[in-house]
Length: 126
Image (tube, rainbow, N blue to C red; front, top):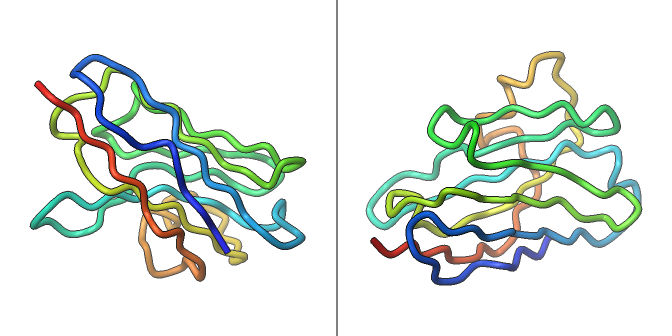
């Protein structure tokens, strides 16, 4: 199971850190991803991080502002969000998959992910 938390209301230019705690063992064998869904829009990829090598990949819209990281000892993945913009307003979901792909690109699609958190709402005011 995945549980995401850390969302809230923040002014434009502010920062938030989302966390996603995973239960169970073998967390380090799962690639992790963050996705988001704004009202009336489809779910979109935000960032992904590999298993033990922690290779990261970002959506163009967040690259340079967001940082994904993981702590395998704590079974937790993080999304540090800086320079937030009103267009970042969405429900943010974490996801996990045991599938391995040689290219991070395949993790930008929601289909490979087997487990999803419940989502945490991020609202950025202008």
